Image 1 (tube, rainbow, N blue to C red):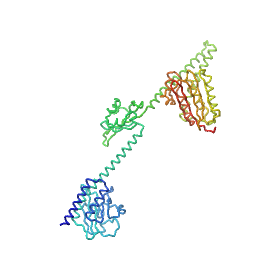
Image 2 (cartoon, rainbow, N blue to C red):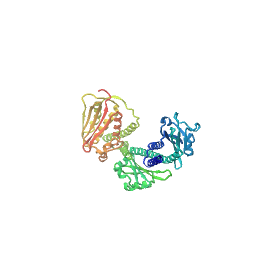
Image 3 (tube, helix red, strand yellow):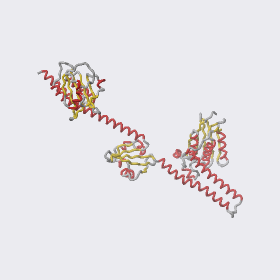
Image 4 (cartoon, rainbow, N blue to C red):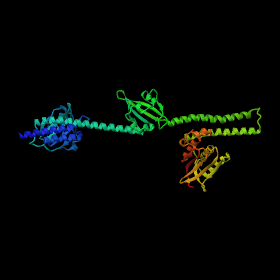
Length: 519
C-alpha cells in the first residue's frame, strides 16, 4: 500500500513538474534536459535520449544521458528505420524487454552492457509527431511494465508541448533578432546617405526619418516621429505632391539648404497593396547654382564678346570709309582702341580655352627650373606703368629661391592675381607682392587696399563663372574664369590657394608651392 502510494506521489510530482515547465521555461536546451532528467529519475533509468525531426525529416539526438554524446551526435535516423524510426512512423509507444532483434535495431553506438528493458514513446503535438523519447534500464531487477509505458506516454504528451513551445519561442526569438538586425542595417544605410529620407505608413504617419532630413529642416528626430505628414510639414505643395505625385519630382526650399528635389516611391506589400511611401529629399543647391552661373555666364560672355567687337567694327568702319575726314591723331587713337579691344577679346578667348584644356586634363605641364624672384619682377613690370594710382611693392628674401614648374602657367597665375588687385582697387593704393619660405614650400601673396570681398562669397570665388556681387555693382569687367584657372594651375603644381578679405579693406590672395629642389 505504502509503495503504491509512494509511486503515485512520484508520478503526480512528475506531472506537476512537466506542467510547470510548459508554462515557465522557454529555454530550448533547458527544457529538453529537464524532460529527460525528470523521466529518467522517475523510472530510475540508466540511459535515455530525446530525438527530434530535423529539416531533412530525419531523427537526430538533441538530448541524451548515459550515452556517448560525441558518437550519437552524428547519427541520423529516417522514419521507419529501427525502433525509434518505427515508433515515429506508427505513433504507437513501444515496450521492449531485453534487446531488440538485430534486424529491427539501428545501433547508435557500440556498447557491452545488457539492456534489460526500454520504453520508446512518440512526442506528439496536435497529432503531429515531432520526435521520440527513449529510456532504458540495464538492471535485471528493474523491468518496465505496461503501466509504466502508459504513464510515460502521458508524460511524453506534456513533454512534447513543452518542447514545441520552447522551439517556437526560439524560432520567434531568432526571427526577431533577424528583423532587428535587418532594421539596424537599414537604419545604418539610411543614416549614411547624403539624401534626406522619410518613411510614411499607409495612413501618412511618419514612421522613420534619417539625420540628413532633420538637418535639411533644422528639426530633431523627435519632431517628426509618429506625426501625420500634414502636422510635420506646412508646405502645401509638398503635402499635395506626396499625396498625389502627378509628376516625376518637386523642387522645394529647405532651411539649411536652398533647393531640395523631392521624389516619392510607394512601398508595396506582397499582394500588391500599398504599404506606405518612401520620400527622398536630394540637395540640388550646388547644381542649381551652377545652372544659374551658366545662365549668367552665357549672358556675360555675350556682353563681353559683343562690347569689343562693336568697338572694333565701329572704328574699323570709320577708318575704312573713303569719305572720312579723320586727322592722323584720330586715326592713331582709333587704331589703338581697335588694338586694345582685340587684345581684350583675345584674352577672353584664351581664358575660355585654358579652362577647357585644364578641366579636360589635356594641358601638359612642363617641369623646368624657375627662379621665383625674377618671375615676380617680370610680372610686376607689366602692370607698373599701366596705372599711376597704384604703388607696387615687392618683398622677397635676399637669396635666390628655385622651384620646379611650368613657368608660363605660373606667370599667368601671378599676372591674374595682379590684374585683379589693380581692378578691385579702383581708387589706387599699395599692391604688395611677398615671397616667403616655409619648410619645403614657398608662399607667394598678393595684397591690395581695394574694395574687398564679402565673407559669405569667399567659398565661391574659385568656381567657374562666379563673380562677386560687388563686381556687378562697381561695373568691373570680367568673366569669372580667371581665379578658376589659377586654382587649377596651382593644384596641378601640388600647391593650394587661399584668400583673406574684408569688404572695404582689401584682399590678400596667397598660394603655396612645393620647392621641388634644394635651394
